Image (tube, rainbow, N blue to C red; front, side):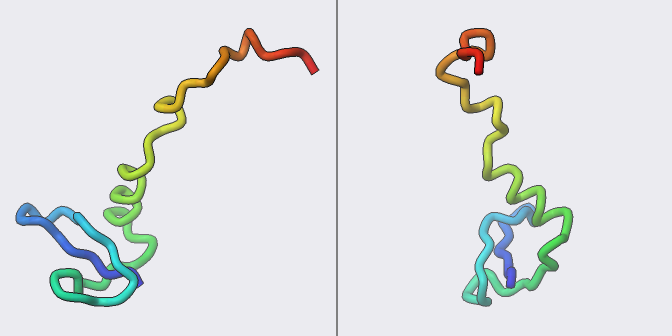
Length: 60
């Protein structure tokens, strides 16, 4: 694990745990290209606005 599938331009477009049709290229789990692919799947925290601003938070 992991094995990747690439698009026509050579970019990773799928990751699977076992080789399968179209996704049979092994890539190291810490490969920078794979880590960048994972990072692009998860929006940054700023994409999730807080329900209230920090200034509106009650004091503890």
